[in-house]
Length: 213
Image (tube, rainbow, N blue to C red):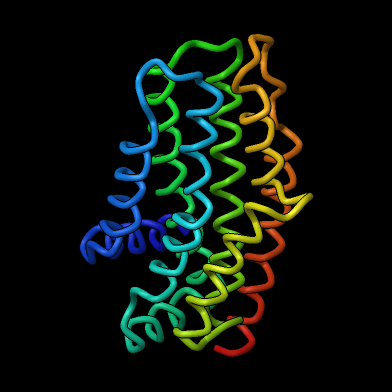
């Protein structure tokens, strides 16, 4: 599995397809976060975009291989393992960017008790939720590129506004505390729910990939 992860990471870096989602995310955070603003609100703003960014990154990793190379890798390592490696690579990359962003936003915002930890957990929940959307809206579940993109955008929006969504729950915790001084409640339940959903979605996608491969 380690070799597959290295292979997927190398493909992602060399393809430079990661530039679009990550540069747009950097611009989004740079425009919307201002020094001296309340920390929970700034962290919530930064975490919001992680849902579509993570979904986009998963889509990139699942589609970045030429069909011939994908066939060779699937034959050597198994289609399910290759599919899993692509999803894990994309999710890990976005998580690293998300955590660095939380630390940077914390450094320039007004301090808030428990803000940094709550921000890290909210960013994790949003990233995992976005990865779930990406896994469910890309091949093999949605093989058409046009329909895949439409489903990704709609799924990201629903993940942000639907009651019960772990991303919405984590963001609500941050935005609600943006004008309070009491310590934030840590969104551990949102992280646990997001991880469970991602695990289930990834397992379903990998199982279907193995059957169709």
